Image (cartoon, rainbow, N blue to C red; front, side, top):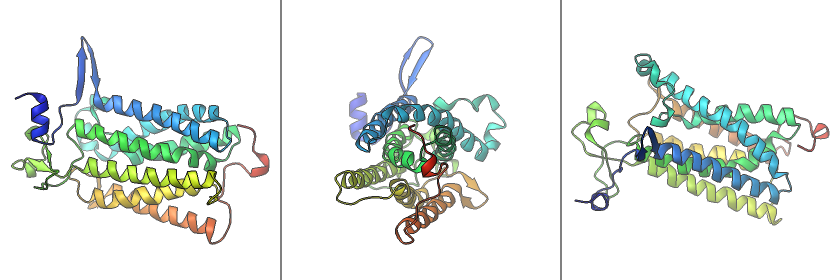
Length: 285
């Protein structure tokens, strides 16, 4: 049976590798991450123009975000899976094989953006609003890397959209099950809906139909993404754990709380969010 027939017969990954050329291996995971970064930069620069912000500022910020987010995403994952990597320390840098955590990337990216905004004397929240749609779109794209790696799947299921997982990738306790919830797909679709919401809010703001206060888009992203992650994480078999707690759920609930408090601060108390640089001291970027 051909590969195409196999894929039509069951929802299954064709494998993590696109092509091998001599010593060079091109993997889906790396290609998707690179694509997400490039698409995100292009989109955020377009949004910056609509907000009359210098798009070159976004290009400069992107370098900081990559430097801050990707190592932090890997470090976050390794720390919570240290028992595995302690036995194989050479695998710590093997990021192309998967094993990064989006919450680690967000934390690393936030720290990098705060430093960048401080140095360039621009509003952190303005930058965050311009990056938020690109961030959630990148997350939607990146989740497909989990599909090709046959990872980040959920509990066994017989639903029509069930995902086939090869025997060697199944958790020991589910070795006799072949089909699982495609939680990567659930999250990718959820993220696309959040992306559509953010773009709709942005367009209404630019058109003057619904003026948004600085920081609104990022706070909405924080709440909306985290709401989806809480319930999707509950289906997964490979959650990063801290004792009995699923770390992603704890961080997501924290994100929801922070986002809601921020929105109340903006729209109920009608006050601007604290920023790294006071408005009167901001430069041109």
